[in-house]
Length: 397
Image 1 (spheres, rainbow, N blue to C red):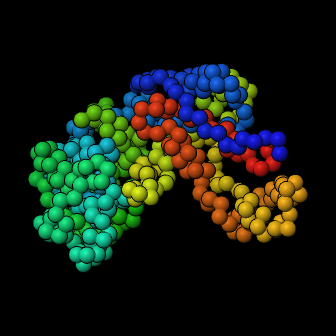
Image 2 (cartoon, rainbow, N blue to C red):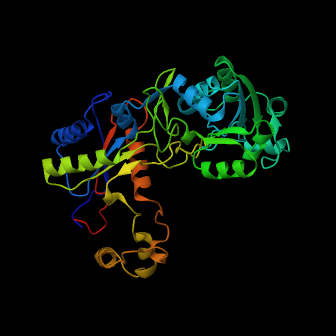
């Protein structure tokens, strides 16, 4: 076994991206310049990934609160609307809420508890248990919530999101009423016109609301699906996956990315003679064990990727082989036996004991998570990630 290095993930610096920048040129040149500076070479099946943020920025895919207000008003009627299951985020939802409230006379905001969908807690499970509250059945008014749990601030941001969201609604010119429930149908006691803001459970929520008598039922993914007076839009995800750009605008999740990743793949082939895989990535799909926050606030990890990134890993568990099939071997004999087993492994190991414990997830979710952790979300300045050796195994020289 002469080769000692397996997978390598490199953050690659790039210029600050503006609308209409040529990402095909920028991504290719940035990675090739990094390879010259750092002395690595591009190989077949390397992965070149870029954040969804720079794609959306290059597309100029932004909307303002007035655009959101106009679309909400047109779709939900502009009177009393229920806004249910938003995540607790200044970056992800606060500006959207301002636009939503501007498009209505009254907003009945229904928050899930003890936490939002991605794990931001309003209260702890212990507090809820102590007060004898049943999250599956109990609907709490704001007054009851305050009586039971007082004022609670987010442990990381220091924000009381209940108070913060109530203030945003009022400042936007709408009356605000806040309730707490986990059954989406509870909102229908207040209004039949509902905007549900959940991400990964949105289809079920829509189905339940419509079956229970909801009239105008829309998801956040159905707001800003077309331009409003020349604004940005996303026909597939609407406001889902958006991020705060300014105090009055949000950057949407990028659209039409497939042509981009395939063009970058072709560019690398032309420049290097190597067939690389290319993807756009957003949030990683992992959960923080301390803050209990599930990172995936985007609708998907990757909105576009080249064909070689389809599927799931097909890997043997080395420690299973070492502890079971070859428990009597060691040293070079163990290495050779495991190498032979890898070389003859089935093309599909799903359900086989020898693959038990390997990660049963899609390649794009795994690689996107690696990319998100590599690039970070702050000031690293590396919105491009170059990954090498991801598809290698123990036998690769």
